[in-house]
Image 1 (spheres, helix red, strand yellow):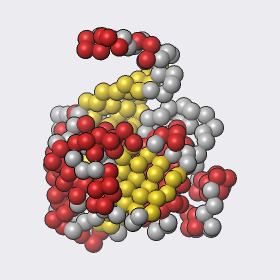
Image 2: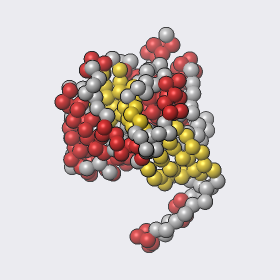
Image 3: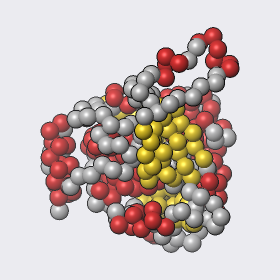
Length: 319
């Protein structure tokens, strides 16, 4: 059985602003913002939530399958995904459209201002689970994507009896409130960062306690403060792994999910899964781009054991 990761597939345009955004906002003029930031550098990287998550899982020995839509410029990206151990057969290429693009500007405090062009992602509702044998699907990850596609996939998972991990992330601000409620009500697990979780509470009308009761697993990431995992009246506080250097925060949350999901698929305890997420996030933070971090299984386990005690559980990665 496989884990299927649905979500955006995109190219990331990463820019660096050699100053502080906060110095350029006037509190009494926020209703009439007109700003342009001259950046020092820009690079184009492969990105999108689904490939980002899948990439870290593949580094850890998984062969995840990606569900999504891309444009006419996707051919090289598909070849790269397959070369990394990611199954891209279910990525649909949309004629006459380009792959979605994410434009993000990062300042010296790692604050970010971003815009997202949907491109072929707008057609994501065209893919379906219906043609995939049920016995091949272990879990489905519903990560940020076209809102209609996210709701369609939620409904399909419920109809087919497939457990799904609901990860609305930045789409909490865009998805219809009733879709967010449906996503939470039927989910096996919910993943959000702290700010997104507060928005999720606001937009669904659920309390934090109600969301926790709806799902078997709730994971809230907190940036450099680590993450909180809630499950069956248990709570685990996961510290962030210190970075050797901070290069770029883009994609760090996706890397956390990739590490966590790999541990979860291996049947490891939730604390170890969270610690794997924390370490994976730090590897990503230390490189510019969302899929440029690299490690061998031996390197990963050795670094993990510098910070945590797995009681030998991660030996499974070394086999």
